[in-house]
Length: 263
Image (cartoon, rainbow, N blue to C red; front, side):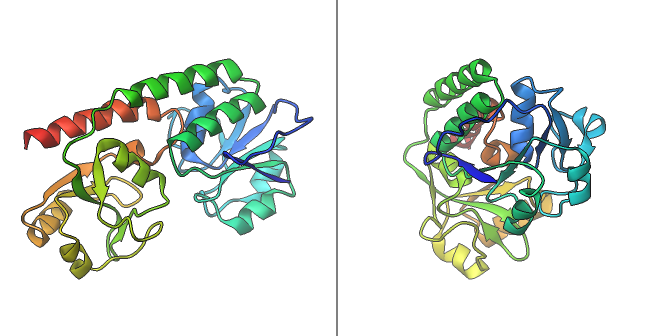
């Protein structure tokens, strides 16, 4: 069974609060911990690194795109949490024969808040979920975006160069900061060439810590490629994790904006 938890979601009649959860999404694993589901979460992926102690206390069921179906089946879950972007459709279909699958699809802050509220309802954690959403909304309302908007490119991969474009949660976070995505006319996570990057004339180049771990030498490369641009390494979790990590994202963005303004 599949169901989507986003703005088009339907109620889930008759679903009893799960007692054994397998989470296949790192940011939502962290959310489950924040909601107080320590005992209910039985399995996670090797990329679910927050909270750190779950890496040893929970069963690792593979990577987000390479799941060990037998391990998941042996856990006898009554709910599996997946994501349309993080997990492969074929694997989602495979685990759907094991237990009900909650497939989330998050493109913006509103989607993220809706997902938190709905997961809270499903897992009998409505009160902490409501509290969390209110805190997130308050923190994001306090962000003072940079003005005028900065023409920005956000890299997620190196060789080939891949960037976050439109229809991504990262793009939404860039907009929250007042960063104008120079590749907003492209979709999702396109490959771009050095010539396209030069032609876009970005004022700000952001190199993410994940999924590709950009280092100091990459900063030097892009600085040479676009001498007029400001090149910064940024925490990818702050831009792409859409669960309880959003509590930290808003102040992180404000600090980043102040850092840029001082340059």
